Length: 75
Image 1 (tube, one colour):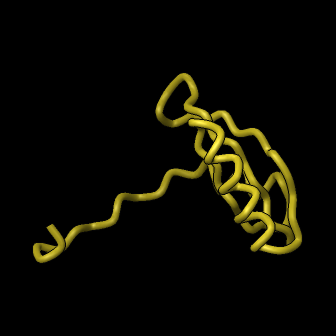
Image 2 (cartoon, one colour; image 1 turned 90 degrees about the vertical axis):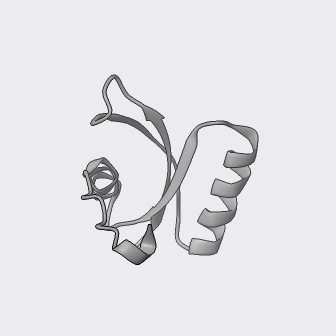
Image 3 (cartoon, helix red, strand yellow; image 1 turned 60 degrees about the vertical axis):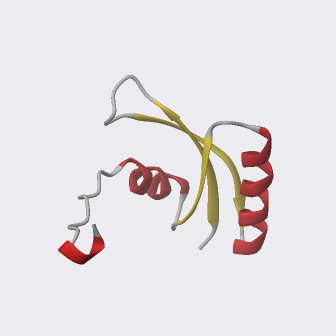
């Protein structure tokens, strides 16, 4: 399964993100290094994600995750 690098910009609401696939890599190290280079030259968020295809990668990036529950000692 390939690794995808996505550029993430804030959308019109907090629930919607504008995603743009930048490049696809077969090796994680290459994807990580490319994302680091892009982050150094731009203020946008860049994420590396592992998925079967580009559509699944976009769906994973769009899903809303529940906020983790903080225990008393973690505050």
